[in-house]
Amino acid sequence: MNSHPFIRYGVAAIAVMAAQAAYAETKIGAIFDLTGGLNIYGIQQMNALQLAVEDINAKGGVLGEPVEVVSYDAQSEQSKYTQYANTAILRDRVDALFAGLTSSSREAIRPIIRKADIPYFYPSLYEGGACDKQTFVTGPSASQQLSVLIDWAVEKYGKKIFIMAPDYNFGTISAHWINEYAEQLGAEVVGEDILALTVTDYAPTIQKIQAARPDFVVALPVGANQTGFLEQFAAAGLKDEIGVVSTNYGSGNQQVVVSPAAGEGLIANQGYFQVVDNPANADFIELWTARYGNKEPIISEAVDTWNAVQLWAAAVEKAGTSDNDAVIAALESGLSYEAPNGTVMLEPGSHHLRQNIYIVEGDANHGFTVLETFADVAPVYENEKCDLIANPDLVEHFSPEGN
Image (cartoon, rainbow, N blue to C red; front, top):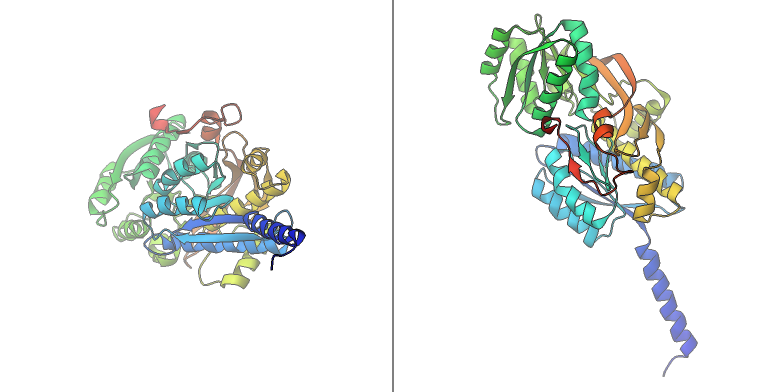
């Protein structure tokens, strides 16, 4: 028996509306290193994203609808970022993507995101200079951190600087900035050692440091390489004679595993440390501890991720839609947020954050003490090079070495 035409139409209309409702869900993608060597960062990044979404959904979601998360484990392999970015866009139809730790992962993702024209958030400290319409950076750039740190260290220790850094963008571009700020301050780089990531024996580097007789070392190795260097530096008896400063020490909770003999007195600076004292951070730590416990300190990349999700949600609300172009326009409107690391403001032209930079000192209990807070530090280099309001088609990864 044939059904009545009105009934047939009604059933069809309901099916269409259900399909449209399913498609209209606000959905975000997350690609982080949940396994492999980088999971000390990726797990906390993912935890922070989930916590932010839970917080947003508990307050009514965005535009009255809950946010759904689709997550992928990049397994600390760059090729997985390309694979999963395509999957997130083509299969899962995400409205925004939050992904990456290393610069190579970010650069693998950016062309894919640009073609899809959805907002992409990179939540990590990095060497700086990434510039395109769809990319938003919530960690500090190298120039933001080093402009503060080198000035402070020259005043504290003296004008002779030794640089040891890894041989890839983060290390080489950071070394450039150190040389530039040293020149501005009338200081001198008396030695450099740019090392392969595979190096684990730092005896040759330590001999170079002894021969150069610097007032302080800027030490930028990553992960286990960093703790290895610091232990060998302390064992050589240099720690009492020469200061050590770093922009990435503690970003993976290296202070927890390094011995007090190596870590006490070491100087680090980033956009966030758990010891930061403000009401927003107290609330954030309470949420985090209730959800994940307090077995390990919260790292800066976790807060970078939390801030990214909160800024995205604020932009969707401001736009009144999850339409890509409208959300990007809202993100470029000068959004600010009372974050765990203090007030942050998204610069419209460069898509980087103005944020506080904290200088801390390692203590004997695998923790930190805040020595000084530099408020509202602008991403000056990125603001100078990258004006996406005036030049929305600009696509570049600027490097000061090419200036």
